Length: 195
Image (cartoon, rainbow, N blue to C red; front, side, top):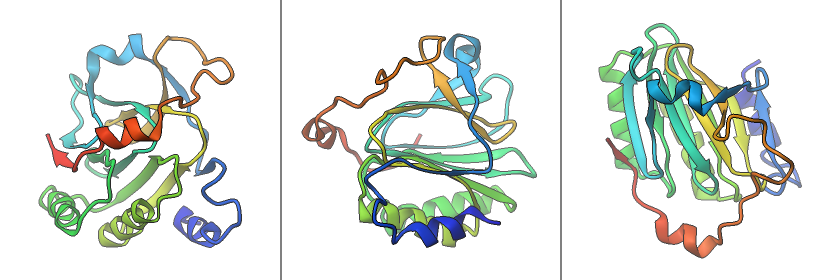
């Protein structure tokens, strides 16, 4: 069953947006930063990347995802990916840019993952819905809301997301709690741009 159907069904839930909402085909496994750093590219808040699998830059690292989100679009057939890390609502022009990028790269068998977004922001949620329908991608992982920041490593060879261990160890309870005030985050928000 496609996870987007389950996601849509739960949109009306009473606790939606107040507790962590996770739907996935499997649990995420861990990856230590020291093992993959040499083969990685970063993606910062407000950036988008389009890339093919290569051994030199196999992983894309998204650290400290809080009120922003990471959207991965991966073509299973060609190991090509588009990664977006919006902190604001994605406008129609950027949606078309993403769709054009996917079309130019001839990405057809698409998987989509959405991670982050600690607040129940209707505009950001509508971006997910619009991108999903525009790209006709299969939504295979949704990990939204909650109070913990996420550190994610995306593998461009396998199309999988890993929980990134920045300190090369499992995190202690409450170690990932987001302590940044909303005002500070709001000052860092930026429009999405491809790098």
